[in-house]
Length: 486
Ligand SMILES: N[C@@H](Cc1c[nH]cn1)C(=O)NCC(=O)O
Image: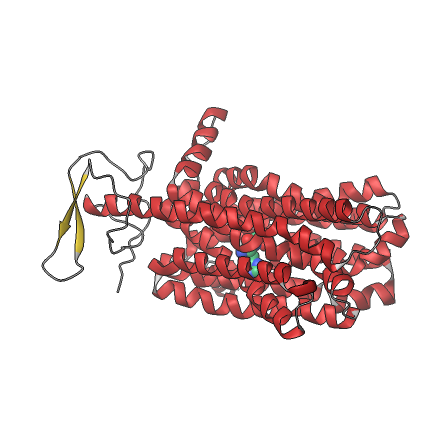
């Protein structure tokens, strides 16, 4: 018996088992998050909602999620990811049970808002466990696998949920969904299964408001932190808007596709995302120094996709072009994970979740702004219309293209600044998360650095002329283990 217990305890301390227990929470979170997709029409019937009220659920959920990212990150750094996952799972379970019971719009909004609160704590808690239990070189792959598992939650929230809603009806379906999370929380409560959190990696103790603010400021002022934010926004926000709200009406109303074709095209986003998550992780793990450029390429391709949809004559691109654009959009989510890799590599362990939360604000804040802008522009161009034409969607998608282009411009700025930051640290002989090769176009401050041209053609390096420390002076540990360019 004792042996069995010891064996169980040993198993429960394995990083993969810990990840499985944690990622189960994320799978449930995405299932709850996306459950309104197929339940939307039934919700409109049961709660007597207009289209605008229905889309306010999406806005609220995304908005609460984005607003909660920094507080959730601070709480995870303070209390550890296991406790936060437990809290999140309990909140989401209760929110879904409440949603199963309500008959009024305000109470339904309250339930969805609560769901957003729980949801906001989940993904970054899982990533914090990954950062604590897996070596740095495995992080990109685990970020991809975590996102991939979340996408399975999205799949469960389509056909199986539709079948449940048809067979069991609204109340029992959402009560069972909530019950699943409440039951899962019991699993997290068991000390042997509970992913143990290394106390040494959490914040030293209770922090005052000023100290908390200082931590957020440090995470935000780090060039790599700002780069992560803009990567997340530029790669993920637009595709998210297409997936969660405006893609389906665009395909059916503006392009005139049947509901079946439109749903199948949206499923491409899921399949492309699955492939993207599986492929990007190993590629970035082997060549971490390409990650900033890779994110820039994906963001650029997404922007091109929007411009194609907007600029195609009459706003009616052929199906093959629409499929190609959706395939490009599907890689946006996986590429946004690069932002989390930067947060993990450039921050001390006690600040990783705060920094991860800040990165995550980018994509979700961007998505809220875009969802709102598209709705407003559609109403402005065709006031009072229930369905909208391709011309109206071209104007509305212009807002998405504009914000994505702005994000890309910020990305370029912060890629260059991050390079300066890393090159300066490397010139001083400090350990850097990723070794990069300097180029003539790197914006190094010539007052402090002197360009040294090597003997081989094209060989450049920078000599440090100052003694000022450049890697985050508040960092009380080494920023992260070094991964050298092979
Ligand atoms: N990177 C995304 C997840 C993703 C990956 N592929 C498609 N989507 C992300 O930021 N997720 C946060 C969350 O809470 O889901």
